[in-house]
Amino acid sequence: MTLDIEQEIAALQRLMTGELRERYAELFGEQPRSRNRAHLIRKIAWRIQANAEGDLSERARRRAAELAIDADVRTTAPREKVVRLPIATPPTTPVDPRLPKAGTSLIRKYKGRTIEVRVLADGLEFDGERYKSLSAVAKAITGSHCNGFRFFNLETE
Image (cartoon, rainbow, N blue to C red; front, side, top):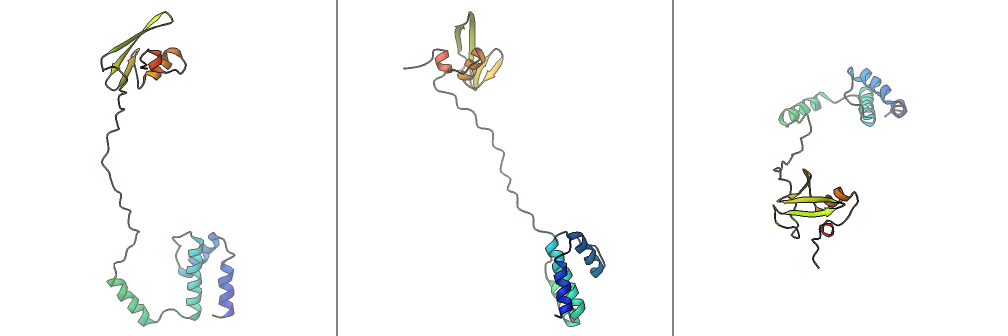
């Protein structure tokens, strides 16, 4: 490589991406598809060198064309295989064994009113609302966190 070509290639490092795209268009006669700076520099440097020192021989071009015909050329990257798993049903909340059987009503007096909570197969019902635990019901009633089993006097000792 002559000194001129080396300086021209070194000057490419100082160009911004937009300027590299313009230089590419000058040399190749079309707009580049890439905005990757390193790729543009390599392609432009190759073209500068090929113009100055000669491109591929006609024999090399023919051989490359033959190989290209025989090769399975991929124009896009292969897609990743997406493994589709069957949609699992959400796990059911296990019923606390300390709770009475479904259908039972828990009744308690609290601040002058009678509280009734129905035990369901998948939770609890109080005032038309569903709850997952006795503690959640007790919090809805009292406004503060407390142990639901203790609040409804279901503790075993």
